[in-house]
Length: 299
Image 1 (spheres, rainbow, N blue to C red):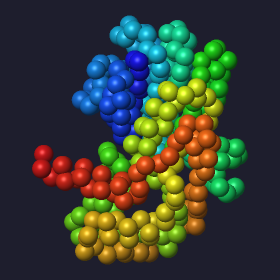
Image 2 (image 1 turned 45 degrees about the vertical axis):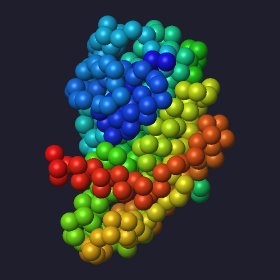
Image 3 (image 1 turned 180 degrees about the vertical axis):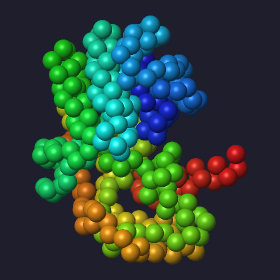
Image 4 (image 1 turned 120 degrees about the horizontal axis):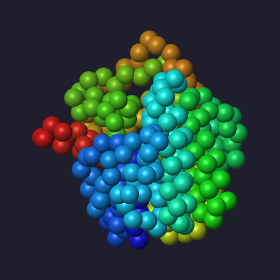
């Protein structure tokens, strides 16, 4: 089966490309800039936020049997136009591509925080949505576009993922910062009391969920998360323990704006419909990030 994957050079996209290729899929990737990605047999350099993105992709590639849309502008600036261009216009063009190609399956990578702040526990796919950032508003818009795509005869599954972890975690994420400090013996710094409980899903589990959507008739919204959430303080302690580090935990005299927030995410629907079962623990993810750092030191 030929798969078209957007955002192929991102953390989530790279994991999806590698996993699908290992399972015998032919994966054609797209990203803004060309970068070598293991698992891709073909690559298109295209900016999805440009008005001619559809034409560029349609000219470069033959029709694919499924599209996995993982590309997104991750900007934290609510006034950054790339959020609307890449995440909204770009998603419209991907849906147009699916329609013209006659692609029967779309998989869209969304985000659990489209709900805003958790007010119901556990967090299910029916939790009210009130995005707090332009980025999350754009992801929710993408989910609505996927729903409209189903009216054109295409199955569309929106995977709401929690905080991605594991291989390829960006250096500025707390997960990677903790690993780096643990490896170098620097204090792991925590805001407030460290009581915020986050859910970190390993990108290899996200990739498995994507493949499940390709092998089962998947449509609608699915939470894709780890089995349990973990507080920032517990994450720091686990990181030090797993990496046998001499580092200490240091509480910074600065409040955490999300102190006490709990992301306890239910994956019951994905378990039922997709047979989704997280395979990678928080310790597995920490080891993968540590291995990334070790490779950087030797390159």
